[in-house]
Amino acid sequence: MRILQQHSITKSELQDAHVHLKMFHREFEEIYVQRREDRIHFVRPCLHALLHMASETVRVGPCPLYSTWTMERVIGDLGGEIRQPSNPYKNLSERGL
Figure (cartoon, rainbow, N blue to C red):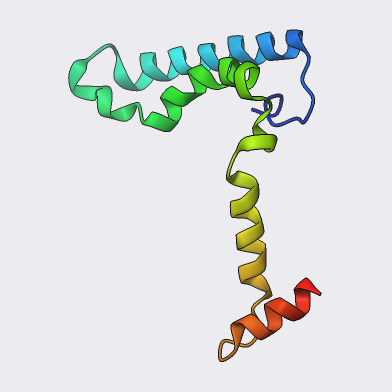
């Protein structure tokens, strides 16, 4: 995941990340799913999405350039800046200036 979070990624780094994510996914399934249909709920969509991270990076670019994680982080930081619950936007506008 650290490789995929870089702003600039080489082809060999991307291939290496893909191999490691596939290995993680396979081991996760062996441990928790055990090829049993009644345990497939253990594989959440976010875990399945790991298998597509490398190909999506080739298609749309590195994660920090298109993901919402960056915006979620900024929103969280701004929420921490609210010091006056009675007038939250006043403090945020001052911090913005």
